Image 1 (tube, one colour):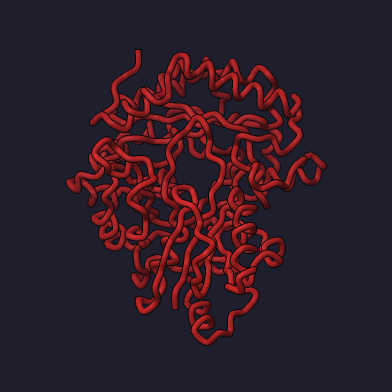
Image 2 (image 1 turned 90 degrees about the horizontal axis):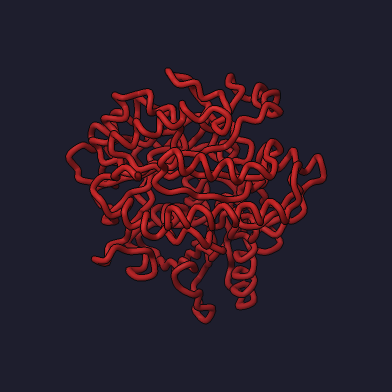
Length: 438
């Protein structure tokens, strides 16, 4: 059987040029028995050839890819080729996806794909395969993602032709309750780590200059990652990930991270909104989110725009340890008024961040924020292609949609006057260790 996996294109953030390979379709491809022929098209680096005639097309789509995924599915279905859609959006909204495809896969591929392949072999494909169960990722039976299917051209590369970043996942699940995020709903709140030996074996095969751990909870699963990073020492791998700033108060963990090859960390700077505390209390022992997961010796319960000094100190600690920091800022929460843009610019400049990423809040489907905005009739667009942080899809509380977009664009322009993004990307992703910006 010939299987064509497709990752639909989506509009990229115009100020952020990297395109990284996605793990979803490559992971499912790795679960496919070897007697089947597999092809993979990432439409972000090459066009879809609609003249090909595989036995089945498998589309993996995040929400921002869903609309384009429907268009691709309809083209192949016109040629009487069955189309399966899975991924984040199909898991969250299977009823919406169903009319556009032959089959919906709603849930984790490790649990659904083996049965789907069996039914394909028997030509008995069902319209829906669904599960809310979570796979045990530490059983050692799953194959690594099929990175060999990636094209050699099209992805961002170094001057030597090496891919800059490949993604990797050590486990799934996140205990946080960030208002705009639906990851805990899809992956669960309990972290499910893979076996260390499986992760280490996969790391050995990655040829890109950087690995991006897409795990959401590295600092919150300290014991597991402490062991993983100790094993990675001496492998000569560079890696990056996302995390909370409180790791700056855990020097032993930071030391092991740096020794294992940590070079870059994304830190989210979203303000503490008191109105979310009752919502948070229903789900977690913490009444705050994002940076405010734990309190070590730094009090992160304070608004970083009101009292920035603890944040400056933590940022400087991590940069002094050799970790470059990319600050991510999302605007449009109810607490934000028009002053947020100038204040955020001043904070980003004064804090010595290596790079910054400014965007608009996205109320992803089924997230706490989306549910709140829907109750208040403030969602103004369900055009999923606009759910990428560059368009306004809801009515902000303290400004107009136009003011929110204009303020975000103004901030990018002002930031680039002081920290040209391409120059700093070359510096951050090219140097052995970051140097302090003066």
